[in-house]
Length: 366
Image (tube, rainbow, N blue to C red; front, side, top):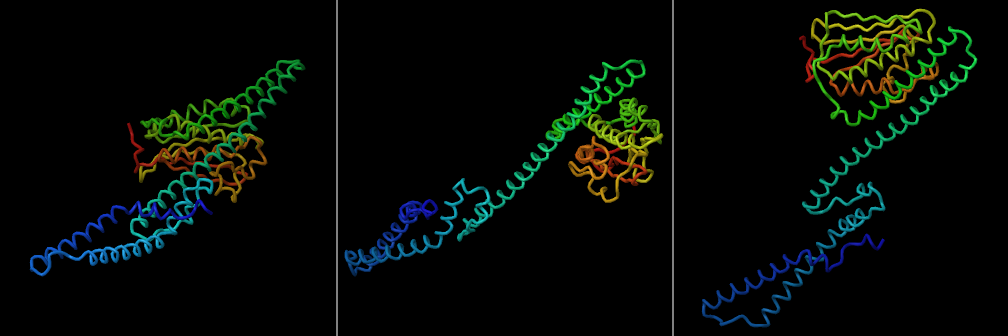
């Protein structure tokens, strides 16, 4: 197309005007030196005008031929630059850009290529993040509509309540749905904060036993309602790790929420155990949350930390969002710790958080 043509000859010569001027100055200096040399020998008084004109014309012809060759040699590079300049063609026009012929052009192309790859990687990561956020927002709104609808239905049923037991059962149901709303709002809030994680981070020595007790207390009513018996086991009077108390509380809360969610659908009494122990060899602290729920199918285990993945359990429990373990993995990784999971289908699940000792977040006693 016309807008992709190489620059005009005038533009090409203008960019090289300084070299052309220097070339003619060099020719004149050569003629001056030759004339002075001949004059010193007493042979002539001056170089003839015809000879001077002939030399200048011959030099100009050689210069013109050289410039023409250089122009044709670099023509494709100039055309590709003009094409890359057209924003309508999109970012990936650079892929077909001519690599250049001179060392300077090749270096410029190499720098542009590195910048393009960096920008492309950042753009892809941003697009993926936006897609995940959009997907999660849609799914979150869908899940939040359920407790709102249930509360509205329970409110209508309240007109027909006749006894104290029925009223208590109704209030318990409303409270449960309200807790689901609160948990959903908390998850959305932490998802938004995750984008600026480094600005919302305060690492200090944290009592993990205290964190575990607080999380269990938050869920004690749900545990009583669904016949789940929580307990905390700790090897030491207190278990200290360098971490962010707020973020690690969020992670433990997610793990306990999942344990209750996938245990309540199983009939009978169930246990929920939070274990805190220190490895005698490497001194790493391990926080484990174990339940006796429905477990996770073996073929689903490799994907449980993927965003929005619910697996077979998502078909059993409508509350599954596929974001709890994903967010937990993201938070734990950014804190410098490690998270692992093991499960036996229809028997239960254990999730471990390992607090590293060989990073900034080293485990230590008081």
